[in-house]
Length: 164
Image 1 (cartoon, rainbow, N blue to C red):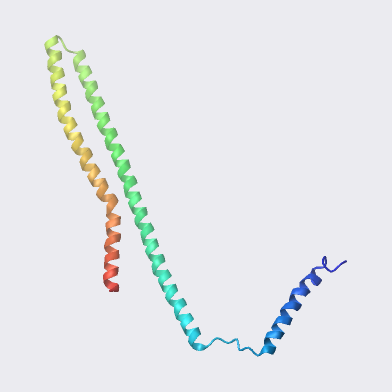
Image 2 (cartoon, one colour; image 1 turned 135 degrees about the vertical axis):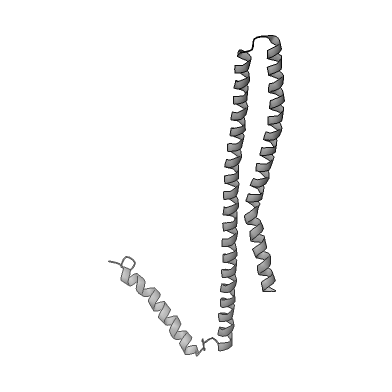
């Protein structure tokens, strides 16, 4: 077996090189110890960096939680909005069927005209009411979605006040 295919022989060369370099450095008499002041500064820097990292990490976690709450509120709001639109559509379709049923039972043209007029009057009132329902729900959804963000900003301002 030659030297390059023998793992023990291949590993021995780097070990020998390392020992030779270590021996040569030792003969130079270099003092490789780190002064106490430098070590203290390094330790203080590491501690401060760790503290900054921990605060930053906490702030990031709070921000992520805030966004999760915001998206959750927005998702719930969107579902409520969709349910409201479906409810309004169902009411309007039912109203149309009621009109059709009434028209089918009408006895003359004047009764048909009266039923149509009453339907349109009722429909305009319903549309106004439905628009108000949608507006109120939209306002409520927006407020609910923004609330976690407002709380986070408020906490951030309070923490800044404490820090100063």
